[in-house]
Length: 460
Ligand SMILES: Cc1cc2nc3c(=O)[nH]c(=O)nc-3n(C[C@H](O)[C@H](O)[C@H](O)COP(=O)(O)OP(=O)(O)OC[C@H]3O[C@@H](n4cnc5c(N)ncnc54)[C@H](O)[C@@H]3O)c2cc1C
Image (tube, rainbow, N blue to C red; front, side):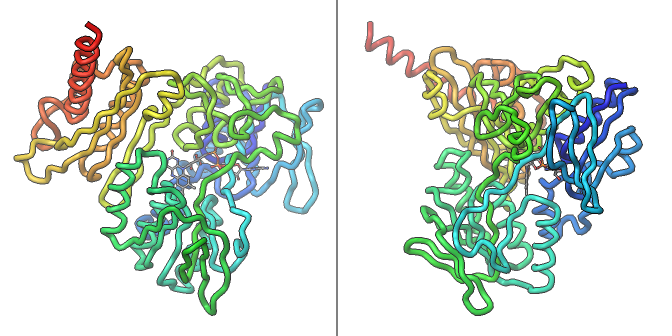
């Protein structure tokens, strides 16, 4: 009987476990999990902290009973300390403080990511929080409940920072987002980031740009957050400046590291060590458009990589097809989405990108509740291939559905013009005879044709 040991019990680890059992029901699967919350949706933490999801238990993708019913053995509250790839064992610390050697035939590393905690004075002060693990959310929830803070600084204007800006605002906390870039959400073009920033300010969130926090200190009952030329006094500070792959265990086992310091893997999620796989936020990710490895830690990717790793660990040959960086985030009334690559990345890849913005109604404007969507389409001038899209609009405007149309088109290498051929649904309350994505694509095609004609006239 094949024994698969998986280290890490979140998105990637449990996806691997479930798939291994599905493909080879006779295999033995053991998942070693450092905490007590296997398969919890940490993506939902901002909604637990806002009170929209009152009970944290509801964040479980699956319960322990569901997982065990699938024949997966969970070792909860056990930390893997060392991997011996020669003897094929994982040393696991058990509750008594002793260690136990767990043998494996195949090993899947799904140790995830760790929050980046800047090395600045004051990070250890009471009232300063990261947000990555369930326990982080319990600590923050307890602070919010017991201390009733009225002001908060969020350091970092990425998607977690912005979700938490909304979450804390909902709890009556006055939020200041401190972002070192020119606008929030650096995964978007800056013009669109400005729209998101306006939305934050419209809901009372203060946004401070071009500022890098250099220290935090106690100031009476409060914290003072300092940067060059800027300082603010708040009751709590949330640090959300990004994550890094959690690879100490893999490094100590001698595995080769790759892009972004993540575990190097091939398309089958195999690491440099035979019989050892890696998936999720601890591993690098294949970028389908750029045809290169990248580091893009997302739950959607972790599930897919985990599934491939689990299947391959029991003898399958499933390729992780790659990511194109599709993402959506809710910021108050807005949904903000992106997929594919932007102009700058396309140029670096040797392409000739053209990016066109359109303002399009989400459905027929005569039907009540129509919202205008800002859609930015990037295509390659030489081939006409769709490279990327970004959408910002009201969350009732089916932004997520629309970015997924673009994502599907990119996945299948469609041209921008080809989007007009798609047979998309239409009824006035939901769309138009030409869907918003088609109208935006047609605007791109028109500009592309005009620039081609201009080039032709110039060279004729
Ligand atoms: C607030 C928040 C919101 C997010 N929102 C989104 C979103 O909307 N969409 C999206 O796609 N992604 C989102 N993400 C990212 C997403 O949650 C991660 O990409 C995903 O959780 C990665 O899953 P993973 O299994 O690779 O790693 P992790 O979730 O980091 O899990 C790692 C696992 O490994 C265990 N572990 C680590 N070291 C050891 C060890 N030595 N021994 C035993 N166990 C160990 C941990 O206990 C844990 O079970 C969000 C993340 C956060 C924090």
